[in-house]
Image (cartoon, rainbow, N blue to C red; front, side, top):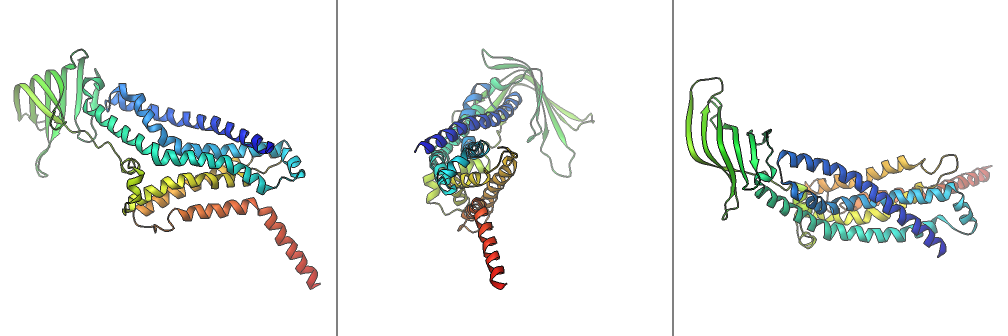
Length: 373
């Protein structure tokens, strides 16, 4: 019991530190991406940290198993380097018992990962999509960038705003240039709009956004030609079509787990197996970490860190590839992702007992030689 408490404490402390470090690295990169989206006017800056909070469980469910994997490598590797494992082995500590001691904290982490992947992450993605939709619907002047040209890649619209008034949510000196839809055999038309003032309006019935421009001029014509149409207006309303918020993965990962259980759709089955696989990944990865943690003084505790990390990445990428294959009907639902888990479970057992297997094969070979002689 003393050895178990000692080993579990070392592993769990390392899990907290490693997971926090990895999470900080990932969230920093995501924060930079969201800042770029705010600067581009994709959503308002006042919801930035709330959106990051909603996306946190989705990152944690992947980072936590990796944090445990690295922690087991470090904790058990230190026992070998400091000769503590030699003393424990002399007192009757076997590799099987070491595996049992590491699997108990691994099962605790697996339970946490299962709860996050099946309950917390779907709720977080739903809240994230809803908040992002509300932000884009109410974005208005909050995300408008003064004195800067903004290009919409989907529609080709170029927008420039000279100044904004946050008090009444209005804009001054508005410039808009966008291509007009024409037939394939016709020359491309471009419309240019300039207005003294502008504001955003949300239709209460449909929830769609409109850009209302006041006191302006609209030019429509072919670039480089003098033949163009000029229209002066007092008020002009333009519908603003926002891009789709959810991606393919976010749509599936945001579904409630209870809805996935009763679904016969391949994409839903793949999403459900992915959530279960994240929990199964933890004890199997721990087995591999224990097997690869054996080292000596000369090699050091970090000698097998790189090959172990590569093996873990193959494990995770394999699960992800099988998920896509199941969703596309290119891989059977059964065994599904279980085939990947079985492959790496066998790999972990072979790595753990490879010395014993090799010794047994060598002894049988020696006995066969002596019997022949």
